[in-house]
Image 1 (tube, helix red, strand yellow):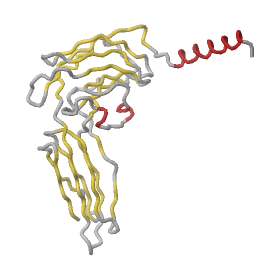
Image 2: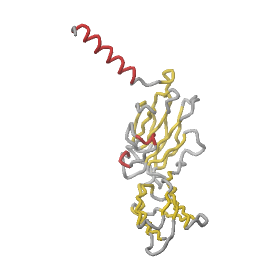
Image 3: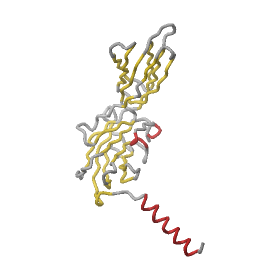
Image 4: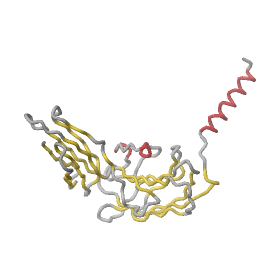
Length: 236
């Protein structure tokens, strides 16, 4: 192949890559993102990262909270159908938008993280005021489900809890309301012995253990997370 043609192919390849990675911005629109970050005692938390991103994992703007827990920055706005996200205390380009809540994505593990999202097609706001954002301490529940030998009991259960990284709808009524993170439903027959589950959540919140024993009416046990490490044993 002649060198001239080689350079032409290389140039076209670079142009194609750049075009394929291009982020769709809504008419070069800018929005102001503001808020204040506090802990569970309403004390300001400084140096917490805040980033805006798109569903194509492109960074649109970023800053950190100051000594008063306050932050403010100007962000580009993604064009629908590409969603708009604001990550608080989370690493950039993470998979939390795809419903993966790995705590390794949290930057300051002393606190929880929040993932605000706007999936609407009408984004006319010029400002996203997130208000007071409370980041609780991280907490873990070690749940042990033990089948007592010698019986034929069956158990159906599920868990409702606030994830250590919680999603918040920017178009919702309460920007401090986390969406419940529900574990997968499970059915355990008499062949199962012991099940161990690790739940990563937030200090001061409650894990709802919802179960049916032998097909009987549903019951709920509320497990408060009062310590960074919590253990609960359920026997059936």
